[in-house]
Image 1 (tube, rainbow, N blue to C red):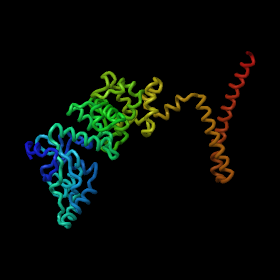
Image 2: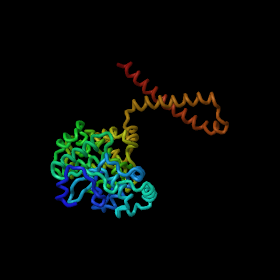
Image 3: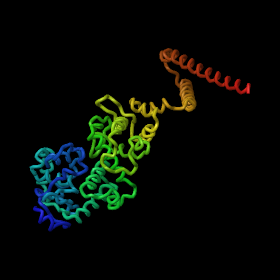
Image 4: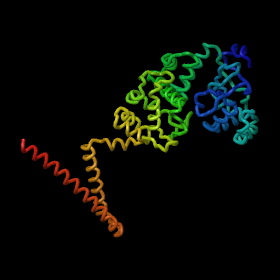
Length: 386
């Protein structure tokens, strides 16, 4: 279909032959594709491997294509590139035996058999709504933004961020314009875009290598959890550490002299396989505590040394708090052990083996009690001389 024809049908719904439809290699959801200029077959394989199409193959083989759910395509160099419905298109190509799906023949075979048994219900000319001109392209952007960023069943966070970055670059729209277009009232776009630009800058400068992450992600990017990046950047302590502004949503937001700090941040969150460094956090719930540690020179040094959040908090906890909590915890444990021994005596061998450790624990407890009494008596004596 040439560009003139595409322009004539822009905004309309029509049925288009499968061979005239192209999978979208630039789809933000395919962030994990990992190739420059992938072939159509590679894009299809990635869709099958990363997102699965079995549900669609099953439905399409029995019912054919459901007309109430048209594909949405944009004009790109005289081609119709599917912007919405790539999984559906991939499944159709597999059932129809398209050459782009040759590597998926074995997976498609049982579904093709069902399709033939059902007398090949229609799917070779699916309904498509075409967007071509500038005005229509803006409408498409609004549609995709509302559907995949603001909606309940939206893209994953990396796909959202990649889409926004692409729109900003190619369509020269500001972040605020995009936010208004899709009804974003919670600064979601700002946070996503800032995280995206930070990651891309650190990747490009070699300060972050995703495959070295010890924490896996989901969705478009599985090497690391992208959502952690924009989450921790939501804390002012992290932004102050990297010296970036709250509203800074431009490419390369980190100054060159601060890039090494980006490595510290990413390693603290994700670990680094190449250096045998573990993450400083167990899960995303500790990100807020980690962020606060970047503001203190003492805790920052411990982060740089590879300490975990729990280890750092234990090492820097006030002695008064540690003493109070520690004594209470030990007392509760010992009380529970004594109570349980009254109810269920252990074997003689176990008792004999634990006598010495118990005596050592008792000795340590006695030492602590004597130390506290000495401090208390010294304090009392000092007060008496006043």
